[in-house]
Amino acid sequence: MADLKICVQNGQGEEKCLACGKDRIHLVFRGEYEPGDRIVFETDETDAYYVIRADSCMDEAYVWLTEPQVIFEIPFEMQRISKNAGCFAGETHYLTMRKAQPKENQNYRNLAKNVIDRHDASGCYPHVSANAETRGEALFAVQNVIDGVTANECHWPWPYQSWGINRREDAMLTLEFGRPVDIDRICLVTRADFPHDSWWTEATVTFSDGSTEVLSMEKSARPHEFAVERTGITWLTLGKLIKADDPSPFPALTQIEVYGKNTI
Image (cartoon, rainbow, N blue to C red; front, side):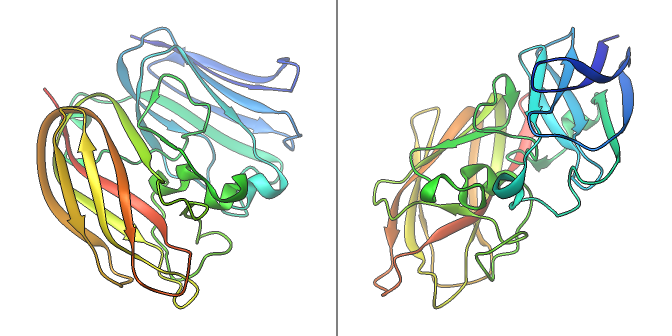
């Protein structure tokens, strides 16, 4: 059995609220979050799957942990604009952590989704990073593409967060799974706030095994779905984004979904 801990800390690392237990725990923190506060999820058993809830207004995160701690900084002001207004608000907060059940780890799922991913995340997968983001703003951060929110008819504010590429022609994101996975489908939800937005006609996915897939797209608010089979991959990149011949300079990605199973 894994020893688990959830702790709310202030900016100096001092404990504000704590819960400990075996395999499955919850924490009810009564009080308003303050700037600098953070949540620390901790386990003594790494290289294992966990299900974590950072806030009652957020989905649970199914994650693979390779390090004993997950640190989640509480967002404030413009950093919170990509979240539901109810997230981290008010005076009562419900947080959970548990080990995933063996049967859960065999399920077919969207292997890209992780609602608690952060730029500086370490040892918590899936994790996404990019070489470009529009103005460094949370509303256009690359983490938005794996948060599970697919609304794409607008570009401001929640639930229309997306990955903005800051007009970079060489923009690329990297999605790390942290362990081998077998996939059979990729879905790209591109932002479709036309005519403000442009779109991509083509993108190239490169996998950890060295193989590539060229994905063709069109102007559409519907998800672009592709049958792509790979086994035992640990990461992929999405790049070589070819913009349509359109006056708008603003193509953007709302969500990337990668469906499959953990490699057994």
